[in-house]
Image (tube, rainbow, N blue to C red; front, top):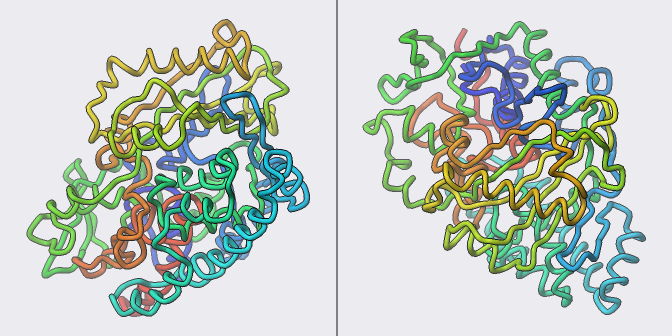
Length: 489
């Protein structure tokens, strides 16, 4: 029984189905995908969540488990550049996987930092070899597993932040921003996320950044087809109210409708803190009690504006990162002070740059994402959402999208309360627990529940963490910790 149909839950269903389990996926919403659901509105198709596909081999492996080829179902297109980064003064950095082009661009900003950039990328590769290839799918079910990797973490300077590691090699402040922003893609603060996450820079160079034609929802639909092809079931509008526990063992779930569904194995792809706090009785929990969950640190939330225009902006690339006037101060407002700042930095997604079919002819589909405080802050989003959207629209109109105010023909927003109420994310955190060193690997909620036998966790809130590679790898860990189906025959 799998609770939730995000990428972690769908990948877990495929893997367990390939091992002989009869799998049922329960989803409280009316469509699959979780954070990766799809909105269809006014002739536009909007991916609600993940839009950056890296490490495509993790998807290919799921198709291979079913005797199929990913390429037969999903058309993945590599993007070049990966991102266009625009500074507040209008300067532009095209971030790509081409080492020569990157050296040239770094030299244009700061010739004296080219050698430091090369050294940083060499360090990023070492972090990748250990943090991703060696430890990513490791089972951190015991403290001894953590003890074995501590020498590696010390060797990698895991006690440094990503920004601190970048700053060790690169002196130009703009380039420090370029090579340290990646933790924000997985809910981390570049100034406190462990430097192990610098591996993302090499991971992107190694496999590139891709887009699924038809949108990320095509990957969701493809995984659903795999599950059905294995004989698995998906039930929508099926909200789990409680994981049933008997003698310390998960024995099934009860739905909010009152229906009881027994199961030998329960896998939760729901938000991890939500799973422990709301789906399990307090008396069944020891390590992840309410007090510990409340004292843990959580990722930022997001403000998202999905919009369609009745004209095309052909000079705008697929992925843009628009940096505001502040970096360290803005990040502190979001993560530490938890206030809604007057300024912002944005991620602008224009999928119609690659796939025009996602909008009516002559139109463009966009979403713009702004990192904002989670619900530990005191922002009243009922009052703040529309003024904030208008500020973002005015900024985009002044910079990349002239005349935007008159061009918008479709619009919807998503705010931190939506993450809490619609996606059941604790405190409206968009990426689960914050990826700091003391909340990573063994310190993170385990893939095999420490509290409940036969309960397993996948998704952003467990090891190895958020982002598509992390979420898919969390399902990979199940192959090591879930017993063979024959044990229940």
